Length: 131
Image 1 (tube, rainbow, N blue to C red):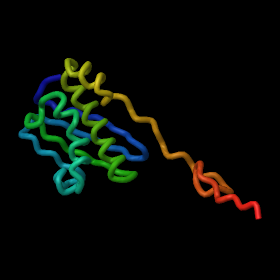
Image 2 (cartoon, helix red, strand yellow; image 1 turned 180 degrees about the vertical axis):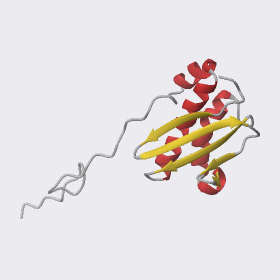
Image 3 (tube, rainbow, N blue to C red; image 1 turned 120 degrees about the horizontal axis):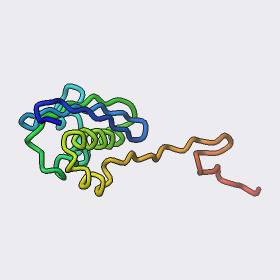
Image 4 (cartoon, rainbow, N blue to C red; image 1 turned 30 degrees about the horizontal axis):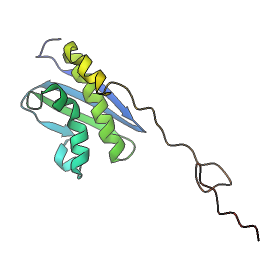
C-alpha cells in the first residue's frame, strides 16, 4: 500500500464499534469531530487509544479520523485501539508481527453476561434468609 492512500480499519470492543481512517499527515487525532483530548477526559483512555501508534513509532506521521459509537468510554477506547491497529497493519505489513505480538489485532471477545431472572445480577444472588 502506498503512503499517499487512506487506510481503513474497523475496531470492536464490548458493544462499541470504531471506524478508523489513517492518512499521511502531521499527527492530528480526531474522534467524532473532536480532538482526542476533548473526547476522552481520562489520560489512561487517551493512552490506550494511542498504543498502536507508539508501538509502530508513527505518532506524528499520520492523521487519524475516528467515528465511534455504542458502549461506554472504556469500550470505545478499546475499539479505537483495535481499529487503529488494523488500519496500520493495512498500511505496512512489516508491523504485523509487532502488532500481533502485542495482542492489538485480536478482537477482545469478552462481553457482559446477561442478568438472570430471580437473581440480583448475572452471578450475584439475593441474600438468603433462613428465618
